[in-house]
Length: 306
Ligand SMILES: NC(=O)c1ccc[n+]([C@@H]2O[C@H](COP(=O)([O-])OP(=O)(O)OC[C@H]3O[C@@H](n4cnc5c(N)ncnc54)[C@H](OP(=O)(O)O)[C@@H]3O)[C@@H](O)[C@H]2O)c1
Image 1 (tube, rainbow, N blue to C red):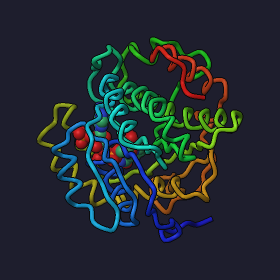
Image 2: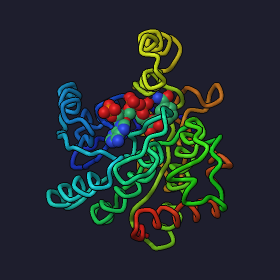
Image 3: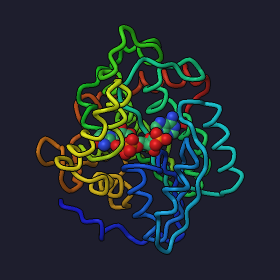
C-alpha cells in the first residue's frame, strides 16, 4: 500500500538518535523529524560537520550534536554514557551511518572498517542504549541497502569473515555489512517479540540516492578528479537524498510493524515511494541471523540485550 510522508504523525515529545546525521539520508531524516517537532541527537564523527548540518534544521523540534565514531567501540561507549546520563527514554535509534568500499583498513579495535562501522558499532550502540529504548517502548531502524541481496553471510560464517575477511573484496564486504543490517533487524525483531520486549525493529533501504556515499568512494579509490563529475552524474540520474530518507521515515511510523522491511519498489527497487517489501532471501535465513548474532556477541565480548 502506498505511503505518503503526511501519514507520519507529529513527533512532539519523541526523541531520536540518528547516526551519520550530518549528511545524506541521515540529515534528511533528521530534517523531517525536527520539522515535525521531534528532539533529534545528531550522532556524528565530526562535530564541526554536525553543527553545520544542525544549522540547516528548522521547525518546532530541537536538535543537538554529539560525537560518535562507530569505528571505535570506545567512542560508542562514551557516546552511550552521555546519552544515558541525560535521558530517561529514547523513542527511536536510527542506525544510518555507513561507509562503502575503499581500501582494507582496520579500526582501533583491529576490525575491518566497513563491518566495524556498518554493523558492529551499531550492534554495540543498540546494546548500550537498550535501557532507554526499553523504557520508551522504542524502535530500532537499521538502514540496509539493495546491496544486501549480494551478501554471502550464512550459518557457516566465521569470526574472521567478519573482522578480517581475506582475500579482501571491498564490494563484497559492503554487501555483507548491509546483509548484516537486514539480518540483525530481523533477529532483533524476533528476539524482542519472543521476550515480550516493548522494543521493535524495522529495516529500511533508500534505493539509490544522491548522497556523499558515492563521491567518497570515488575519492577513496584514488580518483579525486572524478569526484565532481560523480556528483553531477549522481544529481542527474539518482533520486534525491530527501527521497532516500522516506523509507527511514516510514520505518519510524507506528503503523509499520516490527520485523518489516521498507524501501522503494520501482525500477529494481532503485527509486520510488517507500513500500513494505519482502525481505531478501539473504536477509531471511534465521540460521544465518542466529550465527551473526552469536559472532557479534563473541566479537563485542558481551551478550546482546535480548
Ligand atoms: N545513498 C545510497 O544510494 C544508499 C543506498 C543504499 C544504502 N545506503 C545506506 O544509507 C546510509 C546513509 O548513507 P548516505 O547514502 O546518506 O551516505 P553519506 O552521505 O556518505 O552519509 C553517511 C554518514 O555516515 C557517517 N559515517 C561514516 N563513518 C562513520 C563512523 N565511523 N562513525 C560515525 N559516522 C560515520 C558519515 O560521516 P562523515 O560525513 O563524517 O563521513 C555520514 O554522516 C548508509 O548506511 C548507506 O549504506 C545508501
